[in-house]
Length: 461
Ligand code: UGA
Image (tube, rainbow, N blue to C red; front, side):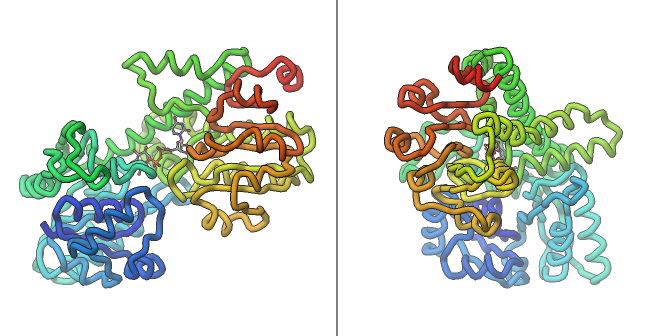
């Protein structure tokens, strides 16, 4: 099938590339000129594992194309995915300006009737507003074409987005007519049957079970996405609450969480305590969800608590740094990891950046290293020294913070790092390193919700 993609952010790019990979003909566009310049030259504006392979081979196979011509993209196909950004407004609401602009663009440029599919994360009932907007713009421009709407939220995680798209557990479609359901089923057929040579494994992926197709009305489909992200955030905040209690009571959060996760009703996913959740999805989605529910007259105390716990993670971690260093001013602190999570260069709402800002505010000097996110972080943090390696960042440091759990940090020569630091102090914001192993190497080690060594307990209490 021919499919058009409006918006070349994380979602649009992965959707476009993966739909091409399963055999469709895809044209993608974005109104961000810088982004389109990169894409039209064969580059990628984001780092996402596996994406460049998929993009390259589909560009070569001429199943995928990028153009800055918005009108051409609208006319390319009768099925259009809207993958534009829905960033948070100051009051927490989702900013739907780009959705509205996409509706206007589609009506203005269409020369045939279209099925318009919202993939962007939006509050429930946005589909209804989108339908009204399309109808209003069509009336004003005396368009003779019809514009139907469907919802198809994405559940991609940055860092594993290509895998998630090709091997989902479920595909949710919100439709209000049979034709839309048929078109969406046809688009996803190779994925629903898991019948395609998987680019990640270079062979058919026989182990992956077929996903469940969930067909709902449009508002339910929209709500499913917000409800899922909010529940994930709830699990993380709950784990962080448990970590705080463990710390006060001398218990070990690793053991508590492991035992909790063995109960299938709870599950072990998204219970890792630490600096809290960041990124462009969980923080903004929970805000938009809360605002929407609040306006609908629903008691949202629980949702406020999820956010409240998360907001205090960095602050309470800073207290640990203050307690360990006593005075932070003029001290050199090494920060490993800047992206909001590993395997991405995305620094939006990254706890690491907020932490660095607070260290700088306290007069500390930060030397940072991240495998992928330094180019983006340099723009945000001009006074930080960005290093070529974790070793360079750690040299002469009086404290080292693990802010993002990149796998390469596990394999560092920690004995060497210990020798080059001016004080061998580790604050592990992700409980990523083995506490015992670090202490055996001679580090003073503090994690989150992990028991302290005797002397450290005395120092901190
Ligand atoms: C999230 C959801 O997981 C996806 O299902 C969804 O499609 C996506 O948002 C979206 O709405 O587009 P993502 O933002 O890529 O995906 O990141 P997550 O893997 O959810 O991690 C979010 C944050 O939570 C990160 O800062 C991570 O470090 C933190 N986290 C995650 C924890 O602190 N503890 C955990 O146990 C898990």
